[in-house]
Length: 368
Image (cartoon, rainbow, N blue to C red):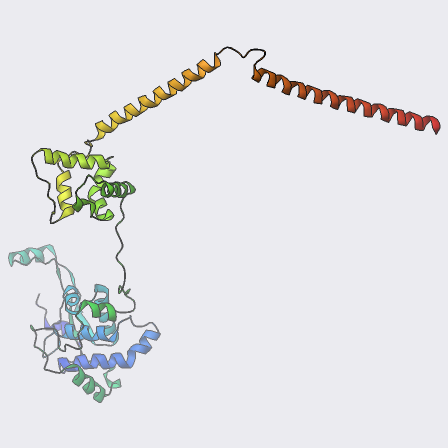
């Protein structure tokens, strides 16, 4: 999209040079950012990030005027290796410092514009915003020129590339490595340095099946050396389908019986195990019939044991009672007699005590 010169009617004079604009941006940052941040008038942006953004943003503007600056947010994200929100915060801070003025806001293309773009083999769906980079007419007077020149000499060790070249000017000022990005990211963006990766969770059935499979000595060594979680990732659909370790073994045996040779050292054990099991229907565990037959045999055995115990109990109860002179009968009679004697003696003592008490009360009455 070609813009007319009228869009720059309200824009102040063009910048003096790209180097001076970048140095002026950093000088204004050093002078004003602390106070702006303390009063929450500016977003959170580190100096290194703002410097990297200024270099990348200015590299896409006309070298002579600083106008027609239209880098996309996606382009800046890749150029300074920061997040989308960080790029947006840098632009917000530049607007506050009167360093960047938007002359055309990005928007989606109309239907007619899209048809014309397609005719030119342009598949983009919108127009990128266009801005002019200016020398901060509102705050430039507050900055000492010597400070600007000092920063300029520190940042630019060589002349900056012209438009179309690299957006990096100084290898020491632009942060491009992932390690430094994590180390120097803006405070508002959470620091992911040292964060442990969240482990994937598996169903309890899958973990149990994986553990029992690793403990089964019938399986080859390469399978038993796999981790429980990695093995659970392969066996999850089978575990949820009701499979046991016997089913996994029978599935592998079926592949072997079909003429396939089971490898002893597969290159990718997890993928190889998944390939061996894919020939068996998950809904039909191979050892299900054998388990059902064993369960039936076990139920029949327990039922037979119960019937035999009931029969022995009935025979014991139907036996002939013991004779009158048997040791057991004499012991039972002795216990019953001792219990009766104890009851009689207790009753006699109670009645004797009542009689003595009545006699004592009668004596006191008549003698009184």
